[in-house]
Length: 362
Image 1 (cartoon, rainbow, N blue to C red):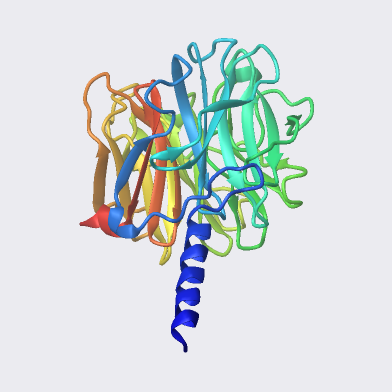
Image 2: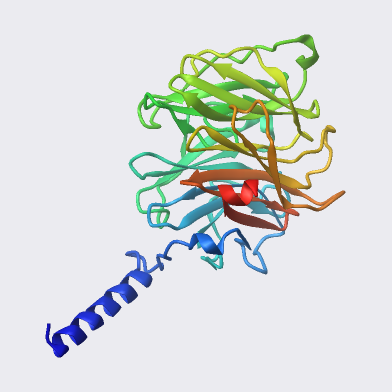
C-alpha cells in the first residue's frame, strides 16, 4: 500500500470512530458509547444537582438498544399531591438529559411508573393515577423511538379501579412468550395477583387473588410482587409485607395459578423490592434489610442467590445510611454480567448505580 493510501485509510478510520462516538438520533440526542467495564462500579444522580421538583420517588429504568438508559419516577411537591406527575431522563452516568415531565393526564396524583421494553424494542410506560391508592387507574404510553417521543396516554383496562398491570416492578416475558406482571390491590384489605398479556400488551387478564399459607398473613399488607422465571413454566414472586420479612409464592404453570403466599427469611421494613436474573439462574435482589414494619429504608443492599432465592450468601451495600435516611424503591435490571439499579435518594433525587457480578461478590 502506498504512503498516501495509508494516510487516507487512517483518516477514514479516525473519521468513522468520531462518527460513532458522536452519533446522533434523529432528534439530535447524543448516543453515548457503552461504559467500559473497568470504570465500574459507578454511581450518579439522574436529575442533576438542582432538580426542578421538591420531592421524587418510585423510579424505574430500561436499557435501550442504543446503549442509553431511560429512567422514570414520580415527582412534585409531595407524594399524593395533585401536582405530582411522571418525570423522565435519557442517557447514562454523567450524561443525562434534563429531567422533564412526560405524563400528566389530569390534576390528580400520579404514581409508580414502570418502564418495560418489549422484545421488538417498543417501550411501554405504565403508571397509576388517582387521589387514593384504592381508586388507582393504570394508564400507559408507548414509544417506538427509544423514548424520544411518546403516544397519548390510554387506560390499560378501561374503567378499571384499583390498578391493573404492573403495580411497581417491571413485567417479565416468559419462555412461552407471554407477558406477566406482578400486581396488587389495596382496597377491602390487601390482595396480590398477576396480570397476563398474550397479545404484546394490548389486552390483560388477571388471575384470582393469591391465597395465604397461614393465618398469620391474614389482613396483613402484602403488595408489589416482583417476578422471575427459573425454568420454563416455573415462575416465582417476592412480595413486600408489613411483617418485617419478604413473602413469596411460586407457580408451575407459567403464572396461571399460584401456591399460597408464604414467609421467607429475608427482612423487609415494608418497602419495595426488585429482582433480576443473570445467566446461570443467578438472582440479584435489591432490598432494605431492616426487619421492622415501617423500619429504616437504609441501607440499600444488592443480594446474590445461586439456589433460586433460598439463600443469599453475598450482599453488597450500595448505600449505607442510618435512621431516617431513605434509599428505597429500587428498579433493577441486568444485561450480561452487569446490573443497573435506580432508587429513591432521600426523596430529593434519583440515584443510579451500575456494577458487575464481580463487584457484588468480591
